[in-house]
Length: 353
Image 1 (cartoon, rainbow, N blue to C red):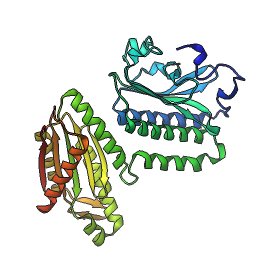
Image 2: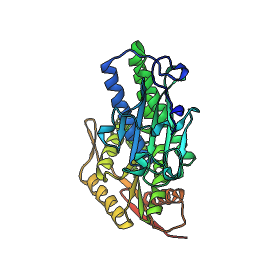
Image 3: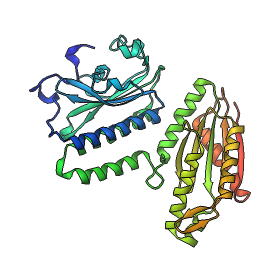
Image 4: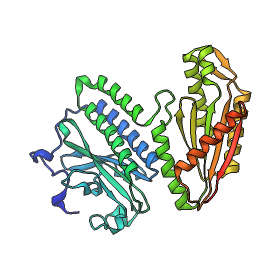
């Protein structure tokens, strides 16, 4: 990287590229850093990468303000790797940093964590001035597709909202509420706080491709609440919503930390289980069935003897199948389970073509 292509020229009076002046507010700055840290956690989990970082502009250049997968010592330091977005201020995606003349000699490429595939995007504040950069990086060469670009833009929108909120003084509280709503709508289900359908299906695509690359099995459990509409008609919509929230919490606590759980439909939840074969996925579904059978779900002051049905599917390594094939098989398995009655489970394996 050449110094004349730095994203933010140092010193005052640097022209249109200089970050806008802001009033120092330690409380709002601490809140901003906490929220940016959350965005990096989202980024790392959504993209399934080891490194995610956000750097903001200061008079002497970009400084890391939030990061995942890098030593804490980099906070407040300049990585310079973010500056690859250059004067065009556009998203940059690099398949293999070790083969890119701009950064192949960078310490993060040559040494730990040996970054290969990476993407960087500018973050803009008020007046659309560039305020910083979000960076995601993988240890393997990686081709970023259209779905990756869409997710990256969603994350940029979240971070930019936080940056704007932090600089608006009197309107901060109102805009923070709007920022929370944007985050929920973009990535999470507002009722259960799990990943929403768009986020969890995007995660499924990445997890399937990762499983194929590693030649490992991947399983899914599509869990559907039996007769949620009946609960709503008898106990009321509020009780049904409370039941959904408790079911979501139980499912989320039943899986490993490496697994993903999202709300796929009003009454259904998608559980993605990397490195899991059909036998273990079926055992998980049976264990959850027993838990719900022995412990009713509380909806306020009411106890509901609620049950779920499960479609359990596994994609075996080396198969010529796509993520949507796995999802379609899970939908069919859940439909078959529900046809047999309530509290049922059907397991299917997606064999190689």
